[in-house]
Image (cartoon, rainbow over all chains, first blue to last red; front, side, top):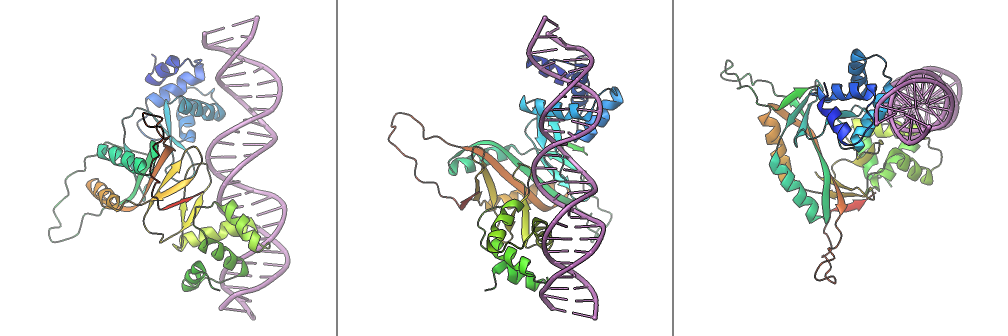
Length: 156
Length: 156
DNA sequence: TTAGGTGCAAAGAGTTTGCTCGTAT
DNA sequence: ATACGAGCAAACTCTTTGCACCTAA
C-alpha cells in the first residue's frame, strides 16, 4: 500500500522506483531521527537491492522537495526526520544520545521578533538543548518519586 | 606581548610553543567565527612555520580546556570563537553566510525551565536563527529608510 | 633531560559523483 | 523511446593520526 511519504513524492512528480518506494516506506514508519546508515539498514531489511549511494541521493532529493528535514545533533552525521511533524525542538541526552522532542509554540513568536529586530525575516531556526537526566534527589524523603515526565517522543 | 588567550593557556599549564603563541594571538584578535582553514591562513601570515595539523590539534586542545568554543553553522566545517564572549546566540544570513551575534538573556532561563520540565539539567544549548535580510518595503513611502540596526557584532 | 609538540603524509569518516547500465513513464 | 534513477567504485572534504624529529621547561 502507498505510504505517506510515497504519496508526497508522487504529488511532487518524482519518478517512483522500487528503491524510492522502499525508502519512502521506511521514512513513513520512522518515529525517530535516523542517520543515512540507519536508513540504509532499515531499507536493506525490506529489499536488499538498495545501495547506500541511493539512500544518500534520495534523502537529499526529499530534503530539497521539503519532504524531509535534515538535522545535526553533533556526532558528525546528518540525521533525518519527515517534515510536517509539527514544529518542535530537540533535547539531546548527553549521556545516551537519546533525543527527546518537545514543543514550545511561544518560542516561534519570540524568535521571529528577535530576527525582525535585527532587520531579518526568519527563514528557519535551530534550537537544541543538551541535558543530563536529573538524578532523583537523594534527599529528606528518598521514597518520593518524581511524577513521570510528559514528553512528545523519545527516540534514538 | 602576551595575548589574552596565551595567558589563559599558561594558566592552565599548557606548554607554550612558538606555534601555540601565534595561534593564541590570532584567536585573541578574533572578533568573528573563523574555521580552521581561516585560522591557519591568519596564523601563517604571522609565521609560516605552522602546519594545519597543528591548528587542528590546537583548537581541539583549547576547546577541551574551555578556552575555545566550537560552533556549527552548517556548511560542514567547525568554526571557533573564544569562550567567555558573554552568552549570545547567532543569526546566520542565509544569503551571505554572515553571522550576527545577539543576546537574549531571558532565553537562558526559559530553556533551563524547559529542560527541567522534561527531567533534565541543562548542560548546554544551541540556538541559531537563519534569516534573510529584509528588503526595505517598496511601499507607499519609498524614500523612508529603516533606521540602522543595532547589533552586537557582525562577522564572517 | 625528557615529556610532550610539530610537520608531513597517510588514513578515516561521511558524503558526493562519473560512468554504465537499467527502468518508469 | 528516452529522460531519469541505480549500483559501484573512485573522488572529495574535513579531520585525525603514526612516526620521526624537535623543543619548552
